[in-house]
Length: 284
Ligand code: NAP
Image 1 (cartoon, rainbow, N blue to C red):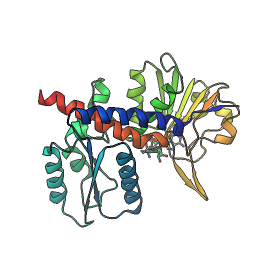
Image 2: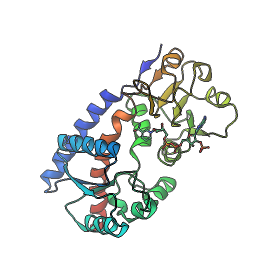
Image 3: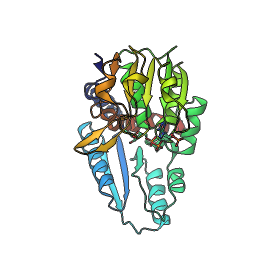
Image 4: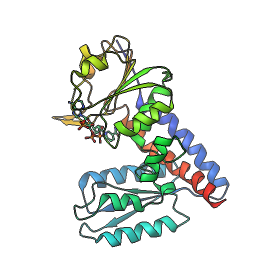
């Protein structure tokens, strides 16, 4: 029976580290601050923004929410981003998605200063993932790596099979995990016979968005399984892994909820602090 990769416990430790780092910045006269931009009133985005506010304030990071009407012109959003880019009291900027249909997501994302882009979506940060340079990277792929490393799982030299090549999780994860010296296989919707690949994995990471896709017979006994999926099912949410089945063969497995998703907001906050360091480098 597998042991849990416990995202909630790891998140507590991570938050304590972040609090300490925040204290350190404050001693140097810098009050870390995150600005979140919400366009319209998408109910899920409102919930996400509020949850970031709660976490950031709990960590001692200042938070400001900027709400624009759903029918705002793109120019208005770009002008707000411009003012946040140049405001030295703001260290991280996050644009809640989805944006209204008449707004170009690409233009808005590219308008955020790369060293304040705590969501890791700016084309420059996406390039840094490829090149291996320091930048701000998306929270969910980072969370997959943190949950492994902080549970004592060695990544170097392991065969990691990633399910999904989405822009948010799978694709950035490929390059982040390569940096940890894994051998990586990427599977997607056009991969015939997923199980033939996943059965070869020492570590399987699922980031697909299909409830309970990974079954027991697709996992090598003793493998480690990380589930980044979030799928709504009657009565709650579940991951891309059939947890009840797969826990019988895996050695370690992350639950949903309580796994990868438990770390993501804290990792956004860690990006705010990393942003301060990157902004300091630019100033020198
Ligand atoms: P996405 O952009 O929709 O990508 C999904 C990927 O899965 C695509 O590469 C797709 O292949 C592949 N896929 C679809 N059906 C498949 C199948 N039957 N077999 C193998 N691969 C299949 O999704 P995403 O934004 O990367 O998100 C992935 C999952 O992570 C979702 O469940 C999402 O809710 C979750 N998520 C979690 C967090 C968190 O905080 N835990 C944050 C963000 C996202 P093609 O490329 O061929 O279409």
